[in-house]
Image 1 (tube, rainbow, N blue to C red):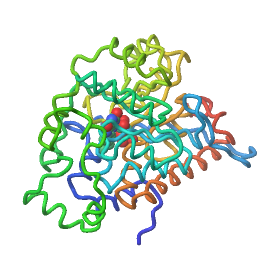
Image 2 (image 1 turned 180 degrees about the vertical axis):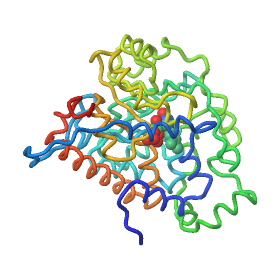
Image 3 (image 1 turned 90 degrees about the vertical axis):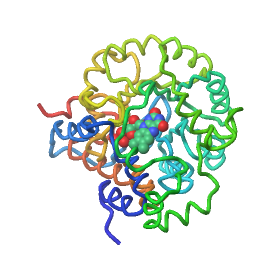
Length: 378
Ligand SMILES: Cc1cc2nc3c(=O)[nH]c(=O)nc-3n(C[C@H](O)[C@H](O)[C@H](O)COP(=O)(O)O)c2cc1C
């Protein structure tokens, strides 16, 4: 078996093991994918200061995100249909995150339900909410997140409408998949994936299926989900959700300094500088290039996190040095999951932690909490 040394090794393995439609679903951005590419490539423009002859012993990556302890400044980003990368994907990824000491954020559009993932883990999950037109459903979902003991609500604001990803349309993507000649060929070449999928009953959106009155079969589930994203979402809705939740809140999808200033007024605990991993507004700036501008606008009033394009521990060091309290990873852990299930998610976290630790040391730092702008080269 090939040696797994970097996230790209997991990506190559996932491509071999996951049916094309689901691998492409993870590895794609909207329209021209320009913003998706910029998220990764802009990190490389940020150079770190190499320091020598300073004591680099006894290093620590431990810190906090919204006051909660994390073993490194990283959380798992919410990703929809994760249970299609690997059978029971959300449960496996949440268990790997828990063991590693980093928060796992479960998507509204997960395959495994909130209750199933909570039952399979012992530490509180973070739950990501999409605002649906059916406010009653939102209210019940928030109640379910509370009942499952979630310790933060991540409210996503950058998906009022869904941008187009060409690959998904070409591949005939659906969860659960429809069987036709095109999809049959995609599955026939991935027997291991098919075998694992046959061992689980979790094949549809677990947070929705069985929880909506009119959704009784798959056709009605598709129809309901497609119509449900709320185009009218406004800052008043954010306040409403904050009231319903009444706990630690993180607003996800803030890319503009003006929006960051409005976000502060809602009383949120943190914001995530994000463009949805280049899956929504193609043509937007990369998340890492907007981070300094957003930090400048919030002036330390709230905690700022970021996601999009983090592929190495060097990237985590860059984001932290610029002033992000933590980063989230989407594709890096999905590649791990598709490649090797739970073990692959652990591997992705190990790779990033090792790279971060080495990078921090060579920058002359021993404690991640001491990292800052002084680590960035002119
Ligand atoms: C396959 C996939 C599904 C996603 N689903 C969701 C989702 O359900 N909710 C959400 O808020 N963000 C979702 N995102 C965006 C991620 O939370 C995150 O912002 C993005 O993946 C970060 O970029 P990265 O993949 O380069 O790390 C998804 C991203 C991917 C790749």
